[in-house]
Image (cartoon, rainbow, N blue to C red; front, side):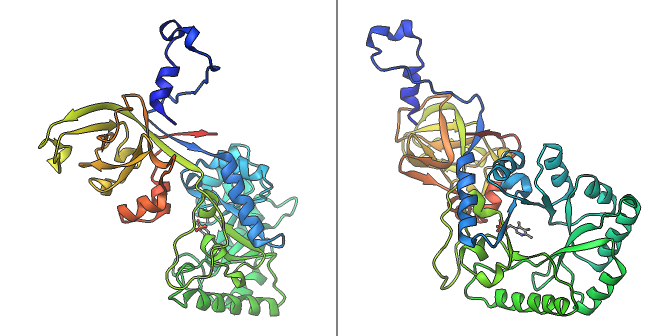
Length: 408
Ligand SMILES: *Cc1c(COP(=O)(O)O)cnc(C)c1O
């Protein structure tokens, strides 16, 4: 995009002279928001197809759309994915699941990975959500819920049981024998899935994934020997898919980050990356002002940037309230007129200042790229995360609700 040219094209014909207009008018829709993200539906769909082709037709791909689809917009992303044939979606909370159902998402299963609290039981049933349970007590609660809510006709409520194989977060640490005992007492709760979650799938200096799998497989084998066979077994998310930890794929995987175009960098000697996914999100902000400052002028709160020579600066209509990390003050980059340029001074709540000394093509109202590509210049969530001292997930999820989502 070349905003300078766009301004000329948008000049009214009576000023530009219609006899000079030999080319057909190109209509470029300017987006009337100070900060917005463009989400490519096609790229999300391509990423989903790529995950499917990597794991093959025998392995179901549960598409993880928690946290508003990692900032991409859960409802629209879910529409794209279900149109692509996704049968399983996964979110974090009952509230997120209800929002999808109320938005018209009819996927056969919406897995609630963060489980449910007692007051959410009726919503789980009413909206046809599938909870992940992480304690034996919760299995009893689901059994009671099924008896209370759905006495006639009799329908067991399906759930997935999460095993804590070493993540040390949600998941039961009960023995297989204890699990079996509760299963016998809870016939109206139906164990549809067995799952666990890896803590270090991209870390090839650690044996943790192998240890977690051994622990998980021991529980599964014990249950199977007692005749309990869950229809779905799943342990892998993006990193275990991308780095080809096939022994962890079973018959379902849970892919989140990959759908949005990312795989975490590996530690140690990792096998080749199987996923070929690309970021689906571009984040822009508008210039509110462009001005020249003399040598020695300071920029922003605390005067933490001092111009070493006369400079042109641009003030963007986005700040940390939009999700630009404060840690990027004097360290981060943006793409302006096709070139990477520096963020100057402290990030403010609503404003960020950048160096525009390299260009005279930009004016107030023009867009600058905070995340995405312009020509050869590229800035993705992983690069931003490295500078901000965090992870790419954190960058994507932090783009705030104030930033408009536009689907292209
Ligand atoms: C978020 C999450 C995933 C998806 O992880 P990605 O790395 O984004 O693919 C899978 N499983 C569980 C339990 C999660 O919380």
